[in-house]
Amino acid sequence: MTTPEPQPSDREPAEPAQSTESTEPADSSEPSEPSAVSESPATSEPADSPAAASAASVASEGSAAASAGPAASGPKYADRIYRSTSGFVGGALILALACWLGIDAVAVGEGNTPWLALAALLFLVPLVAAYTLVPAVFANEDRLRVRNPFRTITLPWGRVVSLRSGYTNEVFSDDGGKYQLWALPVSLRARKRATRRDPRVMGGRTPGTEASRRGGVAPGAPDRSAGVDRAPTDRSMDELRELHEIRGGEASAQGEVSVRWSYEIIAPSLAGAVLLAVLLGLG
Image (tube, rainbow, N blue to C red; front, side, top):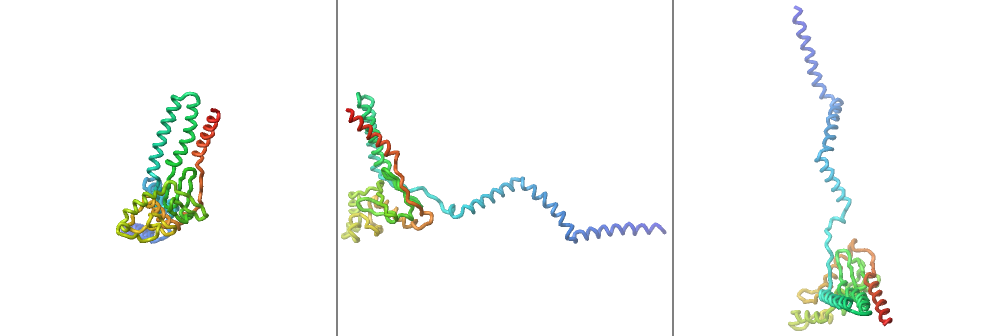
């Protein structure tokens, strides 16, 4: 008779155990602690993993790109370079001839001849290089850099007023400065040859101003109509005017006009002139 009583007592503890398991998920405060404990090791492990490092590098690159802003949005192109090919080739030939004669005079000359040859080379070589090899025009989206024989002028497009072609090619700044483009010499012969190839001229009267008929460009009204043959330097000036019209109002094309004198050419040439004068004076 006493044996059936412990059986329900064994079943009763089993039932509360099931009821406690069912009540634990229903409690909102207790599962939060195990979930936080389970998340902390999970977050600590990927911090040392390669996936977390790659994600951090991607995030740093994204923040750097965002901080760069619109400055890195557009591509940057190399400068357009304009120079006189004939002047460059002619200057190289003159320098080669001068060096050959000077070295020969130094090697076989007697008395003051070697010193006179060295002084002449020191005086002439920088000048020939300055007028033939050095002149060039560099143009990009932000500025125009004019490298003349004895100075280099940097003009942001926002400071350029106009580029004019007459008997010489010139650029004008808004502060009244006028700078000649030595690298783009005007050839009247090339203009006449280009005008003779113009189909409108061959067909009869050429419309436009006298400047357009002789291949030049009237100030403020350049003739760039389709089908008109142009001299090489006039085509280069047309490209510079187009770049000025497009980029003149941009914020990146603003700044100050700078002029730098070419002392690396002036100093040796003056030294050679003084030395040559002293040697000639001494006889």
